[in-house]
Structures are given as structure tokens and as C-alpha cells.
Image (cartoon, rainbow, N blue to C red):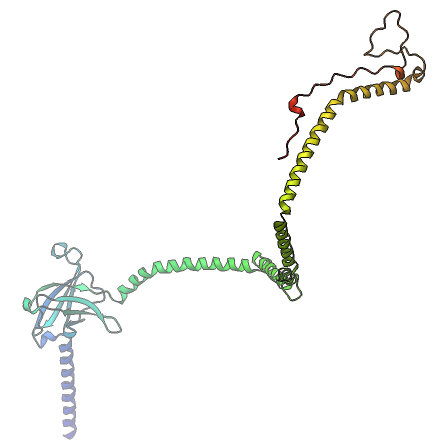
Length: 347
């Protein structure tokens, strides 16, 4: 008997446990079985990620679940052309769902579970009746944020790519510029050589240092330049005191006037003796010609004719030798005008 009783008790315990488990599941899965529920229809553009049984929240508190999804909605039943899905939810009748309320579809938790949330209701609008229709708004979740983020980042990535290419080109140019045998390397080598030469010139034994020292010695208070300037100052001072400069200038003007007069007179003399000098040169040419070809005619009378001789008249004796000939008459000298005889007066 004891065995039978134990078996009966065990069976009853199992049945009761199963009943409680089934009741709990039914309560969770179908709360309308044990309590009164209100049904509402919510229009969405897209119901991706929402399944039947998804939680329905009221200000963050669970008050129901998604009962059914209806898609696509006929065009004549859509409040707006882009609203293609109806999400029918069952909510506890005691939940205060107002007529003026915001309905959103958003993600909760780390797994990104989609839930329907009623929030921001206005009490003055009154409680919503059963089967009231709402227009919901889908909040961008992680799946929607990634494409938008990529869309925002894409220009930045492209710009970064272009910048990296430019940096690569710049690095390549810098490598070429700083490579061995490049212009920059040669310029640095030349600059190094120039600085070395400058250091050598400006050193303690350099030519530049000696030049500066000589210049300093030359321009010092007791230097040759200072002594020269002092001597020049003393000399000009003495000339100014003795009035030697004025007398020297006066003598120079007188000497220049005399020189001008002398050069004028010399020019006139040369002009006057010009014709006589010409005749003398002509006779000398005839004498040398006769001496070269017929030297005996210098002793005996000559019958040689000259272009400027006149024909000999009848009865005239033989032509006289060249050394006995009478020189041609001198040309008549030009009479000087009174103005030419005047000499320049001293300034």
C-alpha cells in the first residue's frame, strides 16, 4: 500500500508541475488567455527584425506583445503610401494607452531585439479604444546606422586615400631629392665647402681677419688716413690764410690767355708760309729728279722742259741750269684784317 501511495503522490506532483509549467507558458505566450487584452494596429514602413511575440513596452515597461504581422497592406488601406506593414499588438487592458502617443520601433539589449514602445502619451487626449490605429516610426538601429555611417565615412575615406597617394608621391620626391648625387646633396656639399672657406677666411690667421685689422689700423686716430686728412686740412688752411689759391688761379688764367694768343699767332704763321713751303718742295723734287736721270745738266745748260716753263722766245739764250734759275715769285700775302690783329684780353 505504501508503494502505491508513493506512486500516486509522485504522479500528482508531476501532473501539477506540468500544469503549472503549461500555465506559465500560456500566460507568457498568450496572456489574453488569463487576462483581458486590447488589440491595436500600428503602421510601419518596414517591420524588419520584428517577430510575433516581440515585447510591447509602455514607457519602458512591458505591457504586451506582438500578436501578428500583416504585410503587404493594400494601397487603398494605407494612411500613407510608404506604410507597407501592419503590426498588430495585444496590450493589457489596464495599460493606459492614450490616443495621442508616440509609437516607435527600436532595439533593446546587446542582441538588438526589436520592440514596440508607446511613449510620450497625452492624457488630455483620453484613452485609446480597442483596435485604434497608430502610425509608428522606426528608429534607426545598428543595422541602419552602419550604412549611414559608411555613407558619411566614404568621402572621408576617399579624401584619406587621395591624401595617402599625395603623401606617397611626396615621400618619393623627398627620396629622390635627398638621394646620393641629387641637387640637394650637391647644394649641401657646396654650402659646406663655402662655410668652410668662410671659416678659414674669418679665422685668427685668415685673410679677412688681416684685412679688417689693416682697415682698423688705417682708419685709427693715429693711422695714415687720419694723418693724410690732417695734413690736407693744414695745407688748405694755410692756403686760405695766405690767399695763395686766388693768386694761383689768376696766374693760371693769365698763362692760359697767353698760350691761346701764341697758338693763334703760330697758326697764322704756318698759314702764311704754306705757299712758299710748297714751292720749295716742288723745286726739291725737280732737283732730285734731274740728279737721278741727267746729273750733267746741273753744270751745262739744260734743254729739259718743265710743265710750268713758258715757250722760249726767238733770240733768247739757252735755259739756265736749275741751280741758276730764279725762284718763282712768292704769292701775294693776304692782308690781315684789323679784327685778326687784336689779341685776346686777359680775363
